[in-house]
Length: 94
Image (tube, rainbow, N blue to C red; front, side):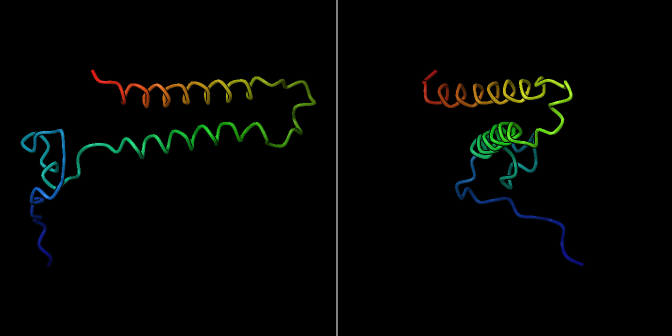
């Protein structure tokens, strides 16, 4: 049977902002978050929301309105504003 114990990383560039005493997996480099991955995922969601504007328009002739499109655009604008604000505030010193 394989051993289940793992050796902690040897200060090989693993940067965490948590104390390994509080979060044992921090010693292995598993803690923290990837800001770049969150930003990329956010922009992908913005593109997906805006792509809903180009769906098939079959049901719009029956008086259903465009409320769904308005919500998609507003959600995309809101998410884009949060992503842009985050990138602007990241560059400003505190």
